[in-house]
Amino acid sequence: MAAKLNTAYLSSHRGIIKILQIVFGLIVCTLLCIGSYGFFSGCFYDGKIGAASGINAVIVILNIVFFVLNLMDTHNNKWERIYTLVALILFVVAFALMLWNLLETHSYYGQTKIPATVFIGIQMALFIWDYRILHGQA
Image (cartoon, rainbow, N blue to C red; front, side, top):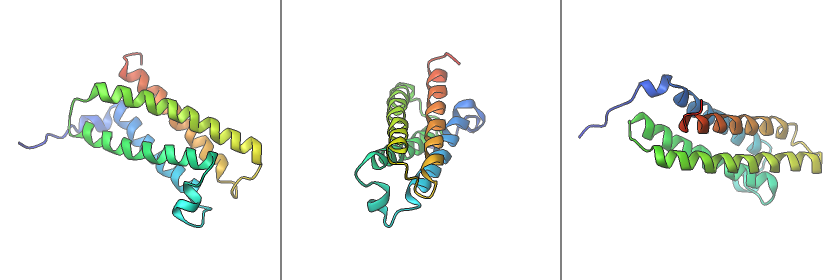
């Protein structure tokens, strides 16, 4: 049994949103890890930045999985609705942690925390849009 590719997904709003979520997630990973001296010592260390970075990394991996599943035309709307809601909540938390860290420390990692916070906010907005599409509101 061969898997059928759903190429129309790539040009749909949901496909474009998923691609943007993956790209922006990889940008956030790069920005948060750029000033570190080791993968686990800088990207995922204890604290607010480490939590936001960990949330982002897990969501990027899950976004890639759901992108491939949707591209292969599997019907997993129930799981994707749950995933989108959970990811939205996690990105609200990550955005709040990044803002808290920016306001508290005033150390900006050579100015990489500010764009990382902006991209996390953009991802949060993309998850809101995706949630609305999945629930027929957009």
